[in-house]
Structures are given as C-alpha cells and as structure tokens.
Amino acid sequence: MTEATDPLVLDLVEWVGREPRLYSEVIETWRTSCPRLTIWEDAVDRGYVMRQPEAGSMRVAITESGTRFLREHGRRA
Image 1 (tube, helix red, strand yellow):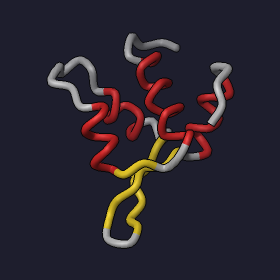
Image 2 (cartoon, one colour; image 1 turned 180 degrees about the vertical axis):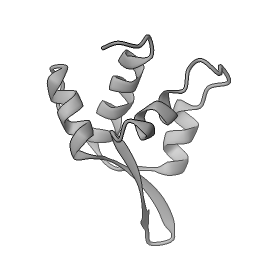
Image 3 (cartoon, rainbow, N blue to C red; image 1 turned 45 degrees about the horizontal axis):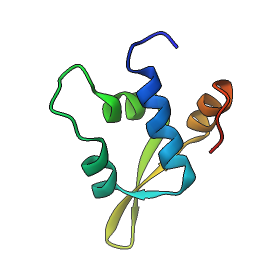
Image 4 (cartoon, rainbow, N blue to C red; image 1 turned 120 degrees about the horizontal axis):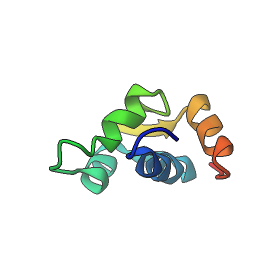
C-alpha cells in the first residue's frame, strides 16, 4: 500500500465484497467532509468497485480487480 488512504479503501472494498450494497447505503456510510479522505472515489477510480443499475435502483459491487486487491492484502470478498 502506498497511500495513506489505502487501509480505508481496503475496508470499503471488503465491506462491499461481503454483499452488493445499495449505492445510497455506500454513500451514506462512507461519506466524508474531508477533501483528503476520498475513499469512495479512490475505490471507484482504481476499479475496485462499480455501480450497477438494478430494478430501479443502483447497486455497488466489487470487481475482479477489487477481489485481487483483497487477496493481495490477506482479506476475502
């Protein structure tokens, strides 16, 4: 891990990896007012999680890259 936010990105990816989450739940849970803590944006930009439209709502799911990221750091999806 190279950035200070990486442990939090890892936590977010692991949390989403347990089960796909509603986008609104992810944003509510991982919202921050600190411009230096861009955890959600970092996870999306790195391709670890993605938004998926589903029956009138938006879900967030882990990607293959996110699964690899977890495995590389001794965690499971």
